[in-house]
Amino acid sequence: MEDDARAHQLVQLGTPAFINQWYASSSLWDAFRRHPTFARVCAARSANNNAHGLATALASMSTGRQVPLWGALGSNQWCCDMLVVVGAEDDKFRQVAAAMVEEMHGGGGVHVVEMPACGHAVHVEDPMGVAWEVLAWLERR
Image 1 (tube, helix red, strand yellow):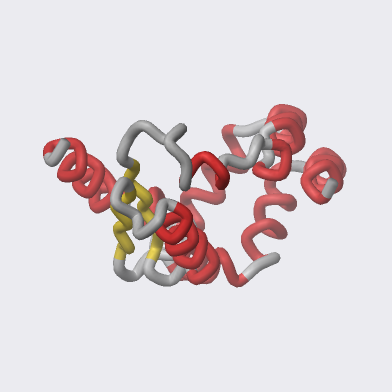
Image 2 (image 1 turned 30 degrees about the vertical axis):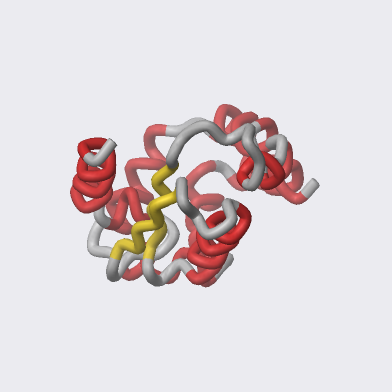
């Protein structure tokens, strides 16, 4: 599995080098790399995390190991509304959000918010904006 290889690489490289490589490895992180807090966030993550702990989390909790819930989205198993927050510059997960709406037969139970000028790390790039969107969504419930 790809995440097992990444976990091994994390232990081999150490946290700071792995973090640098991780964020340089994909266009998924373009908006975050341009964000003014990027260097500070990377430095804090490098200083406050140990490679073995992160590797264990990466290998054991990767999305590839999670039980897929796509089938539940379009069934009567889904019993509640959901909020999906994505960055407007995160093409991959904007497509995932659209697929979730489609799977839910038009998305009656899903509210998608695209955060402007944000990419994949939307919760880091605009934490207050995300908090306000969550609060507004909860108040409508």
